[in-house]
Length: 187
Image 1 (spheres, one colour):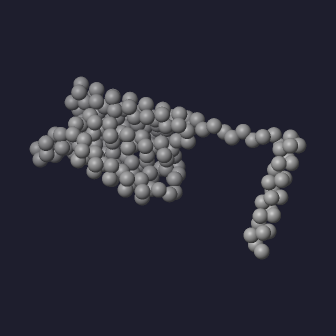
Image 2: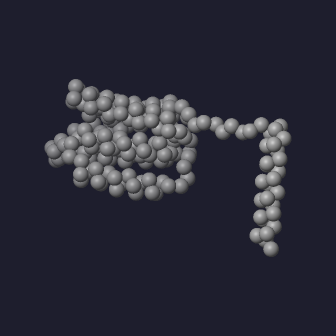
Image 3: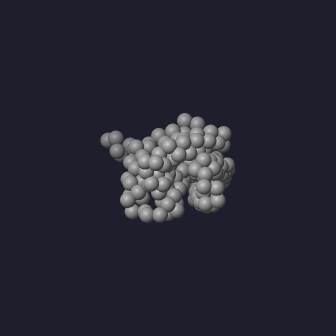
């Protein structure tokens, strides 16, 4: 699948904000606000992880990732009492999944961690100031959409110069030793 784009992230943010606001307003009479917010964080977090995995180039580990996310989400639901810590735990899971699937260096992953922290802080501030589910979810996922701008900071391998006679000799020696080992293994 192709890598996510900022435009894709904006669409995801809008859809999640709309779904979150409609769901919260329609279920407020049935559930307490705290339980409903925990459920929204969990469901929207799971849907976001699904969109990330759908856009990931990784061909293996998807089932394991989903299983670990489900187990972690259940553990967070049971053992994390406050909404702020609950949100932080889910953002940490998103960060881990993005770091493993989209980033190639530690520095890129740390920049993504900072982005997750910024999105969490913005969402908390907006929730406290506006009391709007739509604006809170919109701002959180809009900032999350910026992860595509994090550069790949993987170091490129430096290949030794091939015109060096010592390098060429060592390479030829390794090739000859490998050929001899293969001859002995086939006998």
